[in-house]
Length: 478
Image 1: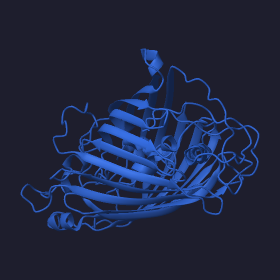
Image 2 (image 1 turned 30 degrees about the vertical axis):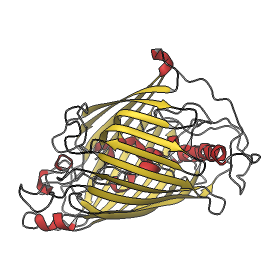
Image 3 (image 1 turned 90 degrees about the vertical axis):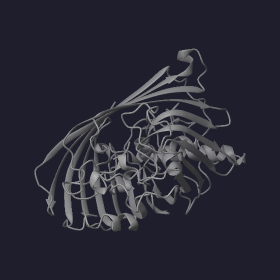
Image 4 (image 1 turned 135 degrees about the vertical axis):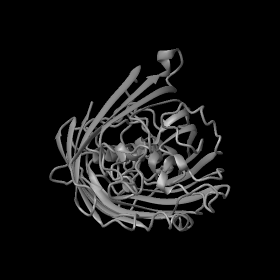
C-alpha cells in the first residue's frame, strides 16, 4: 500500500514526450491519471509528479476485502465493514493544460520537491441516515469516523528516504445503520466485526527501490485502498458508501491484515504479490494469531488501456488461503454454522476477480476532473469461502459545470455460497443480495464536502422487505 504521496504534479501543459521506454511512459501515464483519480475524489492539491502506477491504483491491483456481514445478529440487524496508508493528494488549481492528445499523455519532467520528514493527514466524517422504506426501524442514526495518516521518512530515523514508516490510527463513534436492511454493510466507514471496539492502530514499514519495486511489511488497513481506485475512488469518507461498491468484498482478504506486500512494475504491467495472515487483525498486533488459521495470498496484474484516447485500467486478481474453516470472526454469529456442520471443513479457498476502470471524459479546463465507468466480476470455489459470486457496474465522476462536485450511481449483486445457505436454512432463510446506490457530493470548500446518499437494497435475509436508506455525510480533511 502506498505510504504517502511524495510530491506534487507541477502545473504544466501536457504534451506527448519523445519516444522513451515503455516503463517511463507507463509511470508518466500513471502520474496524469493519478491527477484524474485525485480530482474525482474532490481533492484540491497537486498530485505527485513521480507517483507511479502502483502508488495511485493499489486497489485496482489488490482489489477487495473480506465481505463480512455486519456486526449485528442476522435476526436483529445483520450487516458488514473493512478498513492506503497514503497521506493523500489532489488536484492543482493552476492554469489549465492543453487538451489531452490522443497518444499517451505525460507530464513534463519536473524535479520533485523534497519530502517532508513527517507527513500527516486527518480525515473526519459525520453521518446521519434513516430507513424510509422496508421493515427496518426508522429513527435517525448519527455516527462518525476519524482517520489519521502519519508517514515518517527514513532520514528522520537515520536511514535514507527509500524507507517510510507508517502509523494509521482510526476511531469511530455513534450508532450506525449497518445490518438494518442488508447483510453487506451500507456504510463502509463504520463497519466493525461483531463485538469489536471503536479504535485500532496499524503500523508498517515500506522500502522502495529505484526500479519502483516496493515492499511493505506490517499491519495494513485495507479500507484506504478504495480511495485509490480510478473512477470509483471511494474509501468511506468519499464517494460510494456501500461496501459492495466502495471496496468490493472478496471473503478472503480481511479488513486489516498483517503480512508482506510486494509490488513490481515492468515495462507493460504492474504485478503484485501479498502473503498475509487470513484472520482479521483489527484490534490485534498481528502476533496473537501468527498464521494460526493458515496463509493467505494475493497475486494480481494490471495493464493500462486507452479507449477513444481516454485512459483505462484493467486488472486480474487471484486470491486464496490455506485455511480449512469459515472465517467466523468476520461474520455475525447468526451466519456461522454450528460445529460439526457440513460447511467449513474443506481445506483451502480460491477466488478470482476481473475489474475495469475506464475514463470516458476528461476536462482540459479543469485538471484532474472527469468521469467514467467501472465494473467488476468475482467468483470463488465456495466452501469455506462464504461468497461464491458477485458483480457490479457503475458510473462516477465530476459534473463539467461544477468540477468541485462529484456524482455516482451503481448496481450490485452478491451471492452467499450455496452450501452455506443450505446449512443455515433451518435457522435463517437467505438469498442473493441486490442493490442500487446513488450519491452526489457538493464541494463546499477546499477541505469540506457534503454528500447526499440513497440506497435501495433487496436484502439477503429472505424475510426482509426491500428497504430504502437515505443519508447525509459531512467530511473535513486536513
